[in-house]
Length: 267
Image 1 (cartoon, rainbow, N blue to C red):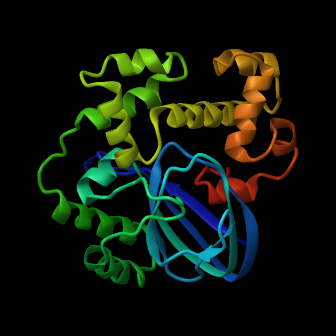
Image 2 (cartoon, rainbow, N blue to C red):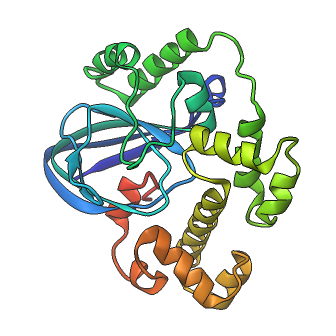
Protein backbone atom coordinates (compact mmCIF):
# COMPACT_ATOMS: atom_id res chain seq x y z
CA UNK A 1 0.00 0.00 0.00
CA UNK A 2 1.41 3.39 -1.02
CA UNK A 3 0.96 6.28 1.38
CA UNK A 4 0.71 9.68 -0.30
CA UNK A 5 0.08 12.90 1.63
CA UNK A 6 0.20 16.61 0.78
CA UNK A 7 0.95 19.51 3.11
CA UNK A 8 0.56 23.24 2.60
CA UNK A 9 3.56 25.43 3.42
CA UNK A 10 3.66 27.89 6.26
CA UNK A 11 3.43 31.54 5.23
CA UNK A 12 7.15 32.02 5.99
CA UNK A 13 8.04 29.50 3.25
CA UNK A 14 5.30 30.23 0.70
CA UNK A 15 7.51 32.68 -1.20
CA UNK A 16 9.21 29.53 -2.59
CA UNK A 17 7.15 26.48 -1.61
CA UNK A 18 3.74 25.60 -3.10
CA UNK A 19 3.27 22.25 -1.38
CA UNK A 20 5.07 19.41 0.38
CA UNK A 21 4.42 15.80 -0.58
CA UNK A 22 5.47 12.45 0.86
CA UNK A 23 5.33 9.07 -0.88
CA UNK A 24 5.99 6.03 1.30
CA UNK A 25 5.63 2.25 1.20
CA UNK A 26 7.11 -0.31 3.61
CA UNK A 27 6.84 -3.21 1.16
CA UNK A 28 8.39 -3.85 -2.21
CA UNK A 29 6.42 -1.64 -4.59
CA UNK A 30 6.43 -1.84 -8.36
CA UNK A 31 4.78 0.84 -10.43
CA UNK A 32 5.21 2.41 -13.84
CA UNK A 33 3.24 5.29 -15.30
CA UNK A 34 3.45 8.79 -16.70
CA UNK A 35 4.69 11.99 -15.15
CA UNK A 36 2.44 14.60 -16.75
CA UNK A 37 4.04 18.04 -17.28
CA UNK A 38 3.27 20.58 -14.57
CA UNK A 39 3.55 24.36 -14.39
CA UNK A 40 5.83 24.22 -11.35
CA UNK A 41 9.03 22.45 -10.32
CA UNK A 42 10.03 20.24 -7.40
CA UNK A 43 12.97 19.47 -5.17
CA UNK A 44 12.93 15.69 -4.77
CA UNK A 45 14.67 13.74 -1.99
CA UNK A 46 14.72 9.93 -2.30
CA UNK A 47 15.75 8.02 0.84
CA UNK A 48 15.05 4.45 -0.32
CA UNK A 49 14.29 3.20 -3.84
CA UNK A 50 15.52 5.38 -6.71
CA UNK A 51 13.05 5.74 -9.60
CA UNK A 52 14.03 5.09 -13.17
CA UNK A 53 13.08 7.10 -16.22
CA UNK A 54 11.89 4.54 -18.77
CA UNK A 55 11.10 7.06 -21.52
CA UNK A 56 12.40 9.12 -23.29
CA UNK A 57 15.76 8.02 -21.80
CA UNK A 58 16.61 5.01 -19.68
CA UNK A 59 18.36 6.18 -16.53
CA UNK A 60 18.16 6.04 -12.74
CA UNK A 61 17.39 9.31 -10.96
CA UNK A 62 19.72 10.53 -8.19
CA UNK A 63 19.04 10.80 -4.44
CA UNK A 64 18.19 14.49 -4.72
CA UNK A 65 17.54 16.69 -7.74
CA UNK A 66 15.20 19.24 -9.31
CA UNK A 67 12.35 18.10 -11.53
CA UNK A 68 12.46 20.48 -14.50
CA UNK A 69 9.45 21.78 -16.37
CA UNK A 70 9.02 19.57 -19.44
CA UNK A 71 6.88 19.90 -22.54
CA UNK A 72 5.69 16.28 -22.78
CA UNK A 73 5.17 13.35 -20.43
CA UNK A 74 7.94 11.06 -19.14
CA UNK A 75 7.44 7.45 -18.10
CA UNK A 76 8.70 6.68 -14.59
CA UNK A 77 9.36 3.20 -13.18
CA UNK A 78 9.76 2.49 -9.45
CA UNK A 79 10.71 -0.78 -7.77
CA UNK A 80 11.35 -1.26 -4.03
CA UNK A 81 10.40 0.38 -0.74
CA UNK A 82 9.61 4.09 -1.00
CA UNK A 83 10.47 7.03 1.17
CA UNK A 84 10.35 10.23 -0.86
CA UNK A 85 10.01 13.85 0.25
CA UNK A 86 9.00 16.35 -2.43
CA UNK A 87 9.02 20.14 -2.15
CA UNK A 88 7.05 21.70 -5.00
CA UNK A 89 8.30 25.22 -5.77
CA UNK A 90 7.83 28.31 -7.89
CA UNK A 91 10.44 27.62 -10.63
CA UNK A 92 11.62 31.16 -11.30
CA UNK A 93 12.19 31.73 -7.58
CA UNK A 94 13.99 28.41 -7.09
CA UNK A 95 16.34 29.06 -9.98
CA UNK A 96 17.07 32.59 -8.75
CA UNK A 97 17.82 31.61 -5.15
CA UNK A 98 20.04 28.62 -5.99
CA UNK A 99 21.51 30.02 -9.24
CA UNK A 100 20.21 27.15 -11.36
CA UNK A 101 19.98 26.97 -15.13
CA UNK A 102 16.56 25.38 -15.66
CA UNK A 103 17.06 24.79 -19.40
CA UNK A 104 19.29 21.68 -19.73
CA UNK A 105 18.66 19.30 -22.62
CA UNK A 106 17.60 16.53 -22.34
CA UNK A 107 15.34 17.60 -19.49
CA UNK A 108 15.34 14.67 -17.11
CA UNK A 109 16.72 16.12 -13.90
CA UNK A 110 18.67 19.18 -12.79
CA UNK A 111 21.57 18.71 -10.40
CA UNK A 112 21.68 20.63 -7.14
CA UNK A 113 24.82 22.04 -5.48
CA UNK A 114 26.09 19.01 -3.55
CA UNK A 115 27.83 21.07 -0.88
CA UNK A 116 24.44 22.59 0.05
CA UNK A 117 22.04 19.72 -0.46
CA UNK A 118 23.90 16.58 0.58
CA UNK A 119 24.11 17.75 4.23
CA UNK A 120 20.39 18.58 4.03
CA UNK A 121 19.61 15.14 2.57
CA UNK A 122 21.52 13.48 5.43
CA UNK A 123 19.54 15.47 8.02
CA UNK A 124 16.21 14.67 6.36
CA UNK A 125 16.84 10.94 5.88
CA UNK A 126 16.43 9.69 9.50
CA UNK A 127 13.34 11.80 10.25
CA UNK A 128 10.36 9.74 11.36
CA UNK A 129 7.69 12.30 10.47
CA UNK A 130 6.98 14.58 7.54
CA UNK A 131 6.60 17.53 9.91
CA UNK A 132 10.19 17.02 11.08
CA UNK A 133 11.35 17.17 7.48
CA UNK A 134 9.28 20.27 6.77
CA UNK A 135 10.75 21.99 9.86
CA UNK A 136 14.30 21.09 8.82
CA UNK A 137 13.68 22.30 5.27
CA UNK A 138 12.27 25.61 6.54
CA UNK A 139 15.33 26.06 8.75
CA UNK A 140 17.50 25.37 5.70
CA UNK A 141 15.63 28.06 3.74
CA UNK A 142 16.23 30.58 6.51
CA UNK A 143 19.98 30.06 6.24
CA UNK A 144 19.83 30.51 2.46
CA UNK A 145 17.45 33.47 2.30
CA UNK A 146 17.66 35.59 5.43
CA UNK A 147 16.10 38.66 3.77
CA UNK A 148 12.62 38.73 2.18
CA UNK A 149 12.73 37.54 -1.42
CA UNK A 150 12.14 40.28 -3.99
CA UNK A 151 10.30 39.23 -7.14
CA UNK A 152 11.83 40.37 -10.42
CA UNK A 153 10.49 40.69 -13.97
CA UNK A 154 10.73 36.95 -14.74
CA UNK A 155 8.89 36.09 -11.52
CA UNK A 156 6.11 38.55 -12.38
CA UNK A 157 5.88 37.26 -15.97
CA UNK A 158 5.64 33.65 -14.76
CA UNK A 159 2.94 34.53 -12.22
CA UNK A 160 0.97 36.54 -14.77
CA UNK A 161 0.95 33.58 -17.17
CA UNK A 162 -0.06 31.11 -14.43
CA UNK A 163 -2.94 33.25 -13.21
CA UNK A 164 -4.14 34.82 -16.47
CA UNK A 165 -3.44 32.58 -19.47
CA UNK A 166 -6.76 30.71 -19.22
CA UNK A 167 -8.71 33.90 -19.90
CA UNK A 168 -6.11 36.18 -21.51
CA UNK A 169 -4.07 35.61 -24.71
CA UNK A 170 -0.32 35.22 -24.17
CA UNK A 171 0.69 38.16 -26.45
CA UNK A 172 -1.45 40.46 -24.32
CA UNK A 173 0.20 39.18 -21.12
CA UNK A 174 3.71 39.62 -22.54
CA UNK A 175 2.82 43.05 -23.91
CA UNK A 176 2.74 44.32 -20.33
CA UNK A 177 6.45 43.56 -19.78
CA UNK A 178 8.82 46.53 -20.10
CA UNK A 179 11.54 44.60 -22.00
CA UNK A 180 11.71 43.19 -25.53
CA UNK A 181 10.12 39.82 -26.25
CA UNK A 182 13.47 38.24 -27.23
CA UNK A 183 15.04 39.23 -23.89
CA UNK A 184 12.04 37.93 -21.95
CA UNK A 185 12.04 34.65 -23.90
CA UNK A 186 15.77 34.03 -23.33
CA UNK A 187 15.73 34.82 -19.61
CA UNK A 188 12.41 33.07 -19.08
CA UNK A 189 13.67 29.77 -20.53
CA UNK A 190 16.81 29.90 -18.39
CA UNK A 191 14.88 30.66 -15.18
CA UNK A 192 11.72 28.59 -15.76
CA UNK A 193 12.96 25.93 -18.17
CA UNK A 194 10.42 26.32 -20.96
CA UNK A 195 9.10 29.15 -23.13
CA UNK A 196 6.08 31.27 -22.14
CA UNK A 197 4.09 29.64 -24.95
CA UNK A 198 4.85 26.11 -23.71
CA UNK A 199 3.99 27.11 -20.14
CA UNK A 200 0.63 28.41 -21.37
CA UNK A 201 -0.11 25.09 -23.08
CA UNK A 202 0.75 23.15 -19.90
CA UNK A 203 -1.38 25.41 -17.69
CA UNK A 204 -4.36 25.04 -20.02
CA UNK A 205 -3.98 21.26 -20.29
CA UNK A 206 -3.79 20.79 -16.52
CA UNK A 207 -6.72 23.14 -16.00
CA UNK A 208 -8.85 21.02 -18.32
CA UNK A 209 -7.59 17.74 -16.82
CA UNK A 210 -8.77 18.96 -13.42
CA UNK A 211 -12.05 20.12 -14.93
CA UNK A 212 -12.71 16.75 -16.57
CA UNK A 213 -11.78 14.97 -13.34
CA UNK A 214 -14.17 17.17 -11.37
CA UNK A 215 -17.09 16.79 -13.79
CA UNK A 216 -16.32 13.14 -14.60
CA UNK A 217 -17.27 13.73 -18.23
CA UNK A 218 -15.54 14.83 -21.44
CA UNK A 219 -17.60 17.53 -23.16
CA UNK A 220 -15.41 18.63 -26.07
CA UNK A 221 -17.48 21.69 -26.88
CA UNK A 222 -17.13 23.03 -23.34
CA UNK A 223 -13.42 22.13 -23.14
CA UNK A 224 -12.61 23.88 -26.42
CA UNK A 225 -14.43 26.97 -25.19
CA UNK A 226 -12.95 26.93 -21.66
CA UNK A 227 -9.41 26.30 -22.92
CA UNK A 228 -9.65 28.94 -25.67
CA UNK A 229 -8.72 26.44 -28.41
CA UNK A 230 -9.53 27.04 -32.07
CA UNK A 231 -11.52 23.80 -32.35
CA UNK A 232 -11.77 20.23 -31.04
CA UNK A 233 -8.84 18.94 -33.12
CA UNK A 234 -6.63 21.74 -31.76
CA UNK A 235 -7.51 20.73 -28.19
CA UNK A 236 -6.90 17.01 -28.82
CA UNK A 237 -3.59 17.71 -30.57
CA UNK A 238 -2.37 19.89 -27.68
CA UNK A 239 -3.55 17.39 -25.06
CA UNK A 240 -1.83 14.45 -26.79
CA UNK A 241 1.39 16.43 -27.29
CA UNK A 242 1.61 17.03 -23.53
CA UNK A 243 0.25 13.76 -22.07
CA UNK A 244 1.14 11.38 -24.89
CA UNK A 245 -2.49 10.21 -25.05
CA UNK A 246 -5.80 11.44 -26.44
CA UNK A 247 -8.33 12.69 -23.83
CA UNK A 248 -10.61 9.73 -24.55
CA UNK A 249 -7.87 7.16 -23.85
CA UNK A 250 -6.32 9.08 -20.95
CA UNK A 251 -9.51 9.29 -18.90
CA UNK A 252 -10.60 5.70 -19.54
CA UNK A 253 -7.70 4.25 -17.56
CA UNK A 254 -6.89 4.28 -13.84
CA UNK A 255 -5.02 7.53 -13.20
CA UNK A 256 -4.04 6.91 -9.56
CA UNK A 257 -0.37 6.18 -10.34
CA UNK A 258 -0.17 9.01 -12.87
CA UNK A 259 -1.52 11.41 -10.25
CA UNK A 260 0.94 10.14 -7.60
CA UNK A 261 3.93 10.45 -9.94
CA UNK A 262 2.73 13.85 -11.21
CA UNK A 263 2.28 15.36 -7.73
CA UNK A 264 -1.51 15.61 -7.96
CA UNK A 265 -3.75 14.98 -4.98
CA UNK A 266 -5.07 11.43 -5.30
CA UNK A 267 -8.06 11.83 -2.97
